[in-house]
Image (cartoon, rainbow, N blue to C red; front, side, top):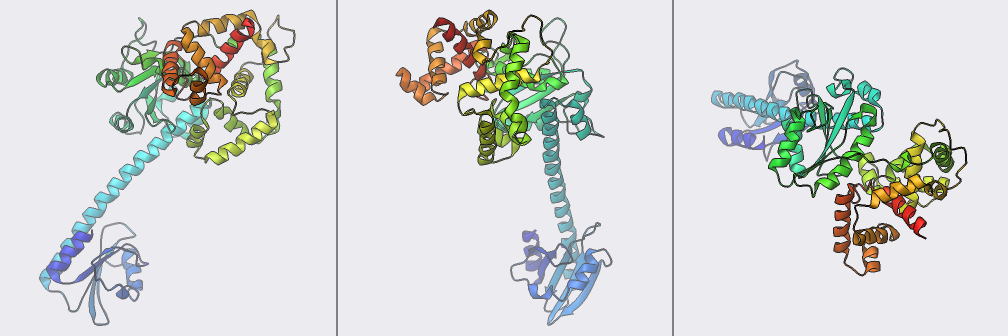
Amino acid sequence: MRKVLEWLHRQTGVHVALVTDGAGTVESSTADFPHEVLGPLAPLLVRMSGGQLAAAVTQSGALHVRCEALGPHEPRPVLVVAGPSKPTREAIALISHTGSVLTLLRRAGHSDRIWHDYQHTTRQLRFAVLSALLSGEPLLARRMTTGAVPPLLDADRLRLYLLQCPPADRDRIVRAYQDPSGYHGSGLMVHCPVFKGHLICLFADDGEPGSAGGKLRGHAETLHRLVRENPRYTMGVCGGHPLHSAAEAYSQAAHALATARTAPGRVASYHGRTPLEGVLPRQAAQEWARALLRPLDTAMKTSTDITRLAVTMPRSAVAKLLGLSRNTITAHLKRAEASLGLDLTDIRCRAAVHLALVLNSSSPAPEAGYDQPYSTLDDLLRTERAAAWAAATLRPLQARHRRTLQAWIDANTDAQHAAHALGISRNTIRTHLRTAESVLGLDLLTAGTGIHDIVHALHITNTRAS
């Protein structure tokens, strides 16, 4: 804009300003434009900006002033030209030509802003849909998208692909496969708000990839091709899940991604394992869970919801996810800690609370044959089924990696302290943990969603050995 106005000044000798509204707001002007002329012009600028006049000529002191309204829509910007004398016919033609050029420039800039705003809005909407699904609320996702419901929400089941790639590639992939509605056909590609290299992709489940009953197609096939063609890409794939189980689907994909980093094709699918809550005596476990969590019934709901997130991801990640400061997150967790009487900075306390939350969200129906009350978590974990689960969980580990995991948990997941306790370097600790992730198929270092299983498995085996 400024360059165009300066060009007009060099050609005609007049000074020019582009005024964007009746209040005299100057968007751009030549260097020595006499801004004092705009005050007396205010009533005229209001009429021109509102579409009542297209052009006007007036005198402001010793200056001859010419005004032209630009564009078809109100409020119309006004080109104000001031000079010591009436411009020549050729100068007037140049002024009108300049107005046309400025109109095109503004239209192009406006289109670009609309495009960026649209991309930002669709990205926010996709994340809102994902958030509703992760909360187990597919109907809420439909309500938020009334009039433009994603086809994914009409599916019975979904499959989640977690792609790790450079952040710039993530943006390009989302735009390349986005349809005019802002979705991705029958799926959604959503920027992870916490991990900048993660792209969360949800597609309608058409069967197990690679099995006789299912065949990769559409964007799922595209993601596999992208991983094959880009050595820096890795991807974890969950099993099929109902729409209301998207949170479990994400957890499985995160575990699979940890395995994919060392897999030959850098793609890994989650292979189901029995969770700890599935081997505990149901009624007794749920009674323990309700007793542990009962103090949260009187806590602020926001504090309770933040606690649910904070036991499955780092506090900094919770802050990014919710758009809150870390101090605010810490304040809410302090309230929850005071209610529970637990220190949530301790990994063993977090593991216990996480298990209780999982148990409390499952079916409360009592299970026959488990009438004996279990007063503590240790009581629950002394069963033969829990021991078998722990042995199966830890079986893939080499002895040195198991020692590293034990030292890491004893150091409250502080790699430096664990390294000091074992007499090895911090880098060696992280290398052992990455290897453990791969052989266990659990995410330990990114979101850390697999740490709780290791805490409980090691505790069970250590208790039985002592």
